[in-house]
Structures are given as structure tokens and as C-alpha cells.
Length: 72
Image (cartoon, rainbow, N blue to C red; front, side):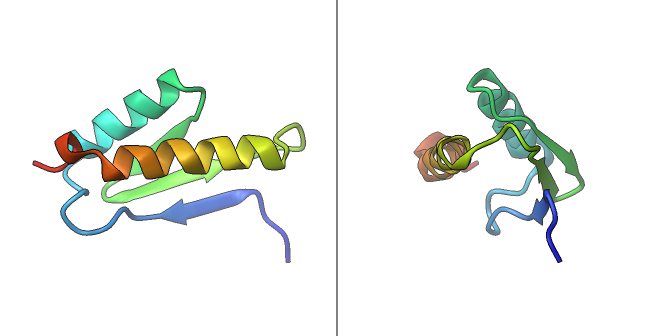
């Protein structure tokens, strides 16, 4: 089965409501839109998102998660 929905939770220590709000906002500025529900995040793609777009989104997410200031 194929889907364009990805649900995930950041690692422990990166899941506070404030941190996730910053994550969603920071990534949105980079063109990556996520929604959140509690400690889970949802990413959705569509047919116009190519492999390069997925790589940009993953790079932005990885960069954010590695930032020292993303941990409170």
C-alpha cells in the first residue's frame, strides 16, 4: 500500500509543546509544512513533491533536531 502521510514523533527530549511549535514554525519558513497533535507530527506530500523536495524536507528537519537550542 502507498500513502502520502507520514506520522512521527521526535526523539524524547524534543517533544515539548513549545519545542514542537518552534519546529513547525521554523520549518514552515523553509517551505516544509508539518502539523502536530500532541507529541506527534504529520507530514503530507502530493504528486508535485519530487525526491529533491523530500530530501530538502529531511535535511531541514534533521538540521533542526540537531540544533543545541532546540533542546530545553
